[in-house]
Amino acid sequence: MSAYEPMSFHLETERLRLQPWAETDAEALCALHAERGDGNPTVEEARMNIANGLASAANSGIALLPIRRRVENDFIGYCGLLVGRATIEEPEIAYELFQRVHGNGYATEAARAVLDAAIATGRRRLWSTVRT
Image 1 (tube, helix red, strand yellow):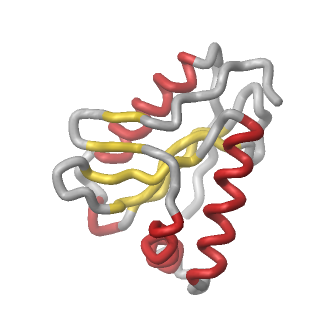
Image 2 (cartoon, rainbow, N blue to C red; image 1 turned 90 degrees about the vertical axis):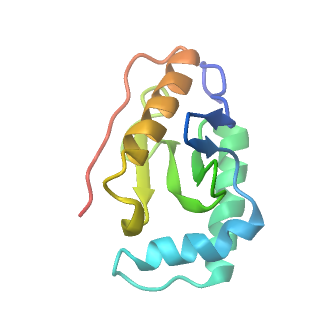
């Protein structure tokens, strides 16, 4: 467990809502991962990823959270904190969105909410890496 307070797992912005994963997010998560072009995960694999993520969040106090647009209530990606290549004290901020919603400022808006949530835990530094 971290020396930091857990981050809020319920974040809202003007256009977005970030909240914990539900099993019903599995199919959309599969579709998002398929857009990467490195294989098509199964719905069962996505459910397992969701279950593992929820367990990890409960233990670590940080999480990747699904992003939904508030008006449309549709899943468009995820954003949050993870240990990744960093540490629990200075985690990575990460996001991934469907290509169809790129260019609308959603990643910036979600990342700002996650950054504010990280600051509220007492953290002063986050890391980020970039994938193609």
